Image (cartoon, rainbow, N blue to C red; front, side, top):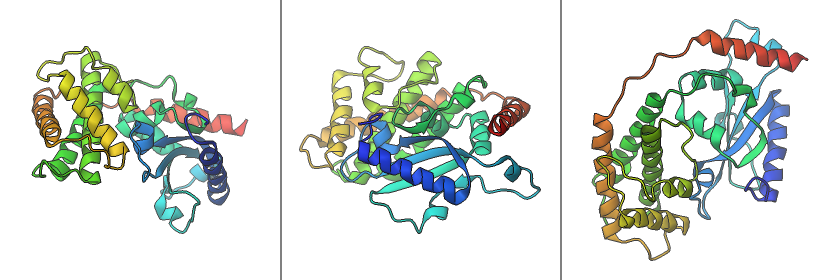
Length: 280
């Protein structure tokens, strides 16, 4: 294992990243495993979600037309892999733009530990992410998942799509609560590490009983087993559904005011510094 990744997968992904660099004439600065594997609740059907940051040659940025700032399945749809891989990359300009906007997905990419190559040192020293913006994002993601896949669903529906959505909501809510409780953007990414934070923690408006925490773990374990373990009950689903609904009410009344975006020149300056380093 390398950084928590099977060595064969690690080597193969890096080989494909080399191919992307050559095909698109870019340099991959950072690549990480995200999705259910990065969050710690993958199962045997889970694919590999590889997210990467890249930079182009300096001359490619000296143009008057708008340049595509992503490399994703639209560009790679003809590719055939030995494994079930999903690549998506952001140009450095998009990375810096989304950092300025406190994008929660970017926050998680930076904090993930299943790293294929590189690091995020080029982002050090930039202003902190806005906590209120992150909370809004996690609250919105939870609401959308709840409304689309959970609300109105039968309590005996233990299908993978529904159970996976409960796992998503659990993770998003716990991250929201840690950010809200401690004003800390570095809420753990792995769901087991998030759950451990709530062993002896009391949050106003939300109860964390031993039974609730066990229901969360049972839900996660059930999904990790490809929904084959006989460890998830209708009572547990009802308990989790009620808890998520209660959270949405708490989050609705706890919305703070987002800060103004930091001065864009901070990020323009960092972009120019990165380009200068490339030319050295």
